[in-house]
Image 1 (cartoon, helix red, strand yellow):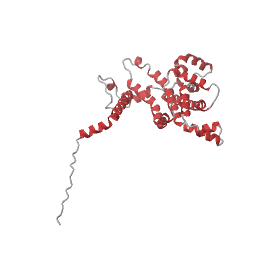
Image 2 (cartoon, one colour):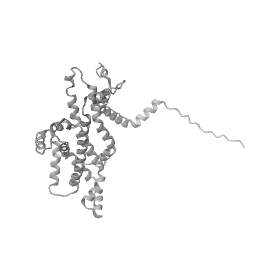
Image 3 (tube, helix red, strand yellow):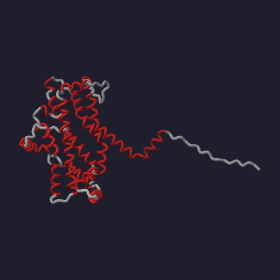
Image 4 (cartoon, rainbow, N blue to C red):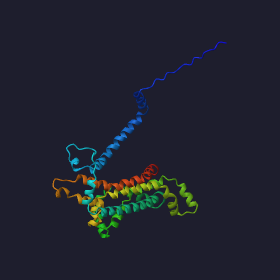
Length: 305
């Protein structure tokens, strides 16, 4: 019997060039590429001042005043930080005051906003909506507009030149935090609270053990916003504080570097100022990085309209 040969067709695979692969990938993901490119451009736009400040804090005086400025430095130095700490006498005191005021105001406002937001979202009482919408309207009132009235009130209550007075004053700005917490509690299922009440919990126990832990993300949003606002606040603090030992970091930095150009003539310590700004903003960046996961969770879960 004759052997029959089976012919198997052989497929020749042509290797695509790198350009063809790139074009095919672009055709498939060109919508995503455009979106990512736009996001990277926006990120660079917002990060450029931060990168410029950090780079300036590491430059020498010759690099800062050269004819063609550079975006980064090739010879970084910590001399600006040393000069800033030397010139900024009382840095430890200013930093401590800022930390006390910011942490105190953040903790107090977060607690008050959580309680008020729960009350406006879950409790029924006469005038609830009127009180809430009146509070929301305070968002559109600039804080500087009532500065003189606040000054007289703080003087009458003997809260001027006091860190406690600053904590209480900053904690009183509850319009935005209460709005955030109210929206968070409105978007939580009421079934959990009803089950806790059926099991024998009173209203406060249902709030403390059931509802408040579910709104942790929104609470971190409020805490982060308040931390950033109080840490960088200048006008109100400068109005209420006259004693140098009670200055916060922002006021102390402004007072120390205000007369540099007049004292040293043509010389202006841009590098030292940039170093001071980097040191002053470091706690805010650290707090955001520490609470970033909860912050994103609060924005995605609780703040729905």
